[in-house]
Amino acid sequence: MNEHDTWDDTMTGVDPGRLDDQQLMKELETIHRTRHDTLLYGSDDALRAHNARMAQLEGEWLRRNPRRPVASGRTREGARERHSGEHTAPTAG
Image (tube, rainbow, N blue to C red):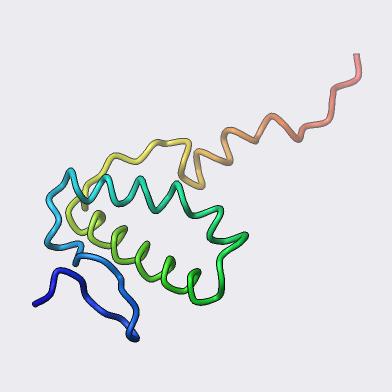
């Protein structure tokens, strides 16, 4: 097996399953940092490759961390609680 895998004849990088935890996190940090520019300025092929690679890396991270901590504010219920007081009309005094 080569160091790089191919997907539709494009390079997608090292199989995420072969990365150690530190390497995987570094790859995730890099791909998230480059996401905005790829979305705004990348070609269709670049965006397609970015989407595929991000899905591979995030999928591997989730596979390794099935019980990751979830912040209560990042759930639907937490978001509702956070916004519950923002849309109330002022009371007459």
